[in-house]
Each structure stands twice: as C-alpha cells, then as structure tokens.
Length: 414
Ligand code: SF4
Image 1: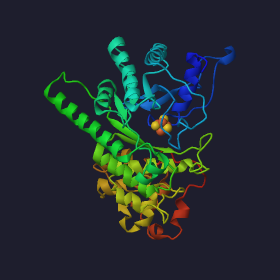
Image 2 (image 1 turned 135 degrees about the vertical axis):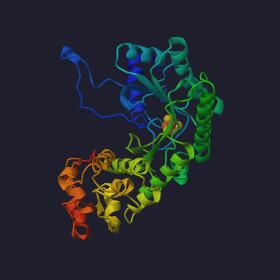
Image 3 (image 1 turned 45 degrees about the vertical axis):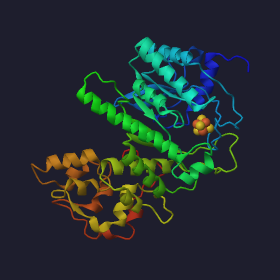
Image 4 (image 1 turned 90 degrees about the vertical axis):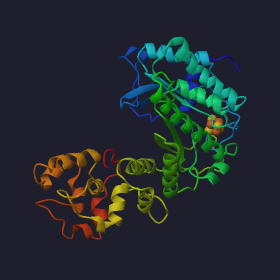
C-alpha cells in the first residue's frame, strides 16, 4: 500500500467510524469554507456530538484506529471480506490529531474504536496506548470514550477504564441466534462476560473512592452498548427485552439503537433495505419509557402490534394508552405522579410542574395546555376542573384522531 497522508487516513477512518451510534452523533446541514468563502466547516471529518455526564453537549473526534479487521461480521463495512480502502493510524498519530483538534477548539474529546488487527489483545493494547499517552504524557483532561473489545484480556480492558471517561462494548445484535448468523467470530457469552467484568470494576472503583479519596477512577461516565436494529429478524419486543436485561445486569448508562444501513458490497444474508429510521426513534422512546417513566419492559412490549414491533405512526406511550384505556382518564388534580407520567403528551418536566402547581390551586385544561406541545393528544386521557373527556377516551377512531398527520418525527413528544 502506498503510504497515506494523515488527511487520507483521517478521511477513511472517520468515515469508517460513522456507523457506530454509541456516541450519539447529531446531524447538521453541510456547509464548508473551502474556496475562501466564510469561516469553518460542518463537514469536518470525524467530528460528532455527545452528551457529557454533566449534560453538556460536547464535540468529539470520532475515528477508528484502523479499519483493517480479521473478523467478518456481515453487517460491517470494515469486515475482512469487504472491498474498502483501508488505513491504519499509529497511537501517536491519533494522539497528535486529538491534541491538534483540541487546541484549535474543534473538539472536547475523543471517541476511539477499531477493527481488530493481529489479535484482540494487540488491538486493545493500541487503543489503551492512545489514552495512556494522552492522559499521562500530555495531561489531557478532555473526554475519552474507548470502544473495548470483548475478546481481549480483562486486564487490558481494565486499563482502558482507568484512562477513559466511558467504555463501551457492543452487543451488536438483539438475539444470540442473530449474532451467531451475522457475526460468526463473536460470541454472546464472551460479550456479556466482558460487560460483567466492566460492571464489577465500576462497582469496585466506586466503593474504593468512598473509602480512599485518591483511589483511581474507573470510567466515571460508565459503560454503554449498541444494538443494530433491522439486520436480523429480531422484533422490537425482542430488542426491548434485551435492552432491559442489559440495563439490569450490567448497570449500563445507555443502550444505543442503530438502524442497520445497507453497506457497499453487502453480504447476501443481509436485508436489501434499511429499516425505517422512525423504528430506531420508537425504540429510543421505549427506552425512555423504561428509564424515566416507570414502565416495566413487559408493559412496553404490550405496546407492540401483532408482529411484535412498535407502531411507527404513533409513539409507544400513546400506543400503550390506547390499548389500556381503562387506566384513563386520570384526574390531573389528584392523580399520582406515576399515573400522570402515563398520560400521552405529558413529559417528565410537565408532570413535575403539574405536581408543584396543584398544591396551590386546581388546574384547568388551559393550564395543562401550557405544558404540552399538543393538548389534543392529552385531552382524551385527563380530567381537570373544567374538562371531562366523556366518551372521547373510548372512541373507536381515537388512534386515527391522534396519529400525527405528517411523517415528521415527534422529536420532543413524551
Ligand atoms: S469486529 Fe466485526 S464489527 Fe468490529 S470492525 Fe471487525 S468486522 Fe466490523
């Protein structure tokens, strides 16, 4: 291979990293200042956005150390049999890039993943080396998220946690059978074993810091994982069940869902079409229902349709409410917090405001309307001093009345 410039490597390895959703990058309109017009560029290779533990949105340099890989996961553009341009950074090159971007204020941290070269241990050691040089030789205080390799020795993964703010291990697919079929070199037991070890390290480090102020930190922003949606036959009910088990067993901060996107030179075992993006969005909404709205996984599964998938035209909270109409209407002035959190269209903040305001006075429909984007969606499920839905809650065509008319995502609906 002719020697590549850093820029050429960056182009290849930033592009190869874009399929990983587990640092939650956000989209933006394409603009650039090439040709001397204007300042700055939103097409900068490898910059993504993520949320820091304190809730700030931060920019990260998101790259792979290399896209060479000895594994052959069918859904992955970097798999051994894929015919893509390859590149490989040295740890020092990643360090230099990170520092250069950081000093120019382009980024506040690094998200580093890698294909597997030589062996899992060798690759993991290289990833750790990047973080070690940054932290120890340059006193780098920015955010570091390291993707760890479940097949690597636990001791090397542990080292990663000592340098990184967050570590993640991808479970890849929602079912063990899907993993066996689409990622034949990977093993579900090994992946969950590695997540279990990281959890044990997190717990141990937290306990140690309670006792000794200077005990080393271990991944203070916790661990996360990513599941690919739509590459196999797993239903949303399967995915919700898997996510809930992962949260319970491994104290994950986040499960990320990534809609499978067809890749160049795709393997014949993969679907030809990507699942609708709205499916990924519905799964994120269901995740929020479990994490912030008090729904049990079985309840979210009850919101699925006969094929085991969440409806695409309405959000899962509304789907649940339409199926369990006997739980409504709830009296906004008397209902418990748990009951209010189940009202479609009322978010967590709105519920807290209702609880605070009703201590001083009885709320009317107009008061609730000020707290929601769509009082039309809320009305069938609540009573106030001046509103009773009467027969509205039981109308056979209620779903049609409440389903959004356009295809637009309801990004902020609860
Ligand atoms: S291990 Fe699998 S998913 Fe990871 S880079 Fe290699 S082929 Fe892709």
